[in-house]
Length: 294
Picture 1 (cartoon, helix red, strand yellow):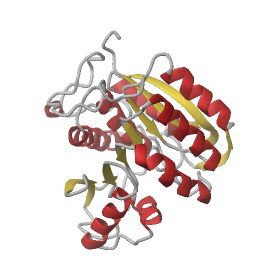
Picture 2: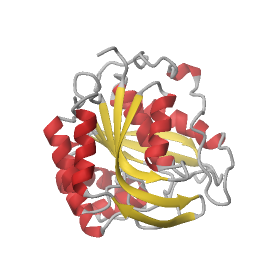
Picture 3: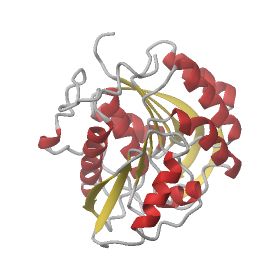
Picture 4: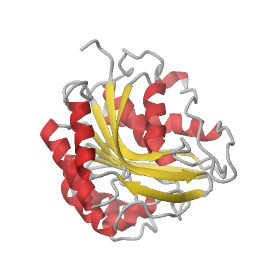
C-alpha cells in the first residue's frame, strides 16, 4: 500500500446529497480518506422527506463489497441503511469473509422526517449477524430504545440500555444524545460505553433545522478517523467536534431539514484533517491498518 487510508461505506444512496453514501463519501474525503461504497438501496429523498426507495438485490450488494474489499481493501468499514433481512445477511457474510474488524454500525431505522428505512425483521438480523462484528455501534435515542426494549428516561435507564446493546456483541456503544428527553435542554450529551464505563461527551444542543444526515456524517467521521489509525475514544471525540461545526455552519439548503456542512473546519487542537496520508494525532490504540478489511 502507498499509505493512503481507505474506508468503505455500505449504505443507501441519498440523491439529495445530505445523507447516505453521499454524506459518507464527502466526510471520508474531508478527512483525507479514500472512500468506496456498496449501495444497498436507491432513495429518492430531499430535505422535505423521503419520496420513495428501492433496494438493491442482495447478490449485487455482496458483489460490490467483494469488488471493493477484494482489490483496494479498507482500513475501516461502516454500515448504514441495510433495508431488509436478506441484505443484512449478504452484508454480514461479506464482512466476515473479508475479515472486516474495524466496523462502525449505524443502525439506521428512520429518515429525519420519520420515514421507515428498514423492515422490522431486519433489525433482529442486524443484531444477530452484524452487531457481533462491530467495533462501534452508533444508535440515537429512538434506535437504542428499539434495540434494548427500554425507554431512556433517566441516567440509570441510559446505563441499562448501553449494557443491553453492548451485550449484543459490539465492543463500544455510542449513544447519541440529540433526541434525549431529560437533562439540561441546552446540552446534547453523547455517551460512549466500553463495556465497563460510560464516557460523557457533552456539547451544545442546536435548534437549527440543518440536521439532515447528522447520523451518517457522525458515523462516517468516526470511520474515517479509525481508518487513519485513531483509537475509538479519540475518533469519537474528533468526530463529535466536527459534527458540531458541521451543524453550526450548515449551508441552509432546501425547504426542510437542510444538510450539514461537510466542509466544516475541525478545531485545531483536535488534529489536522487535511493530510490524506497522515495518521490521527495522539493515536495510541490503532484500529485501522492492522485490523481493517483487505
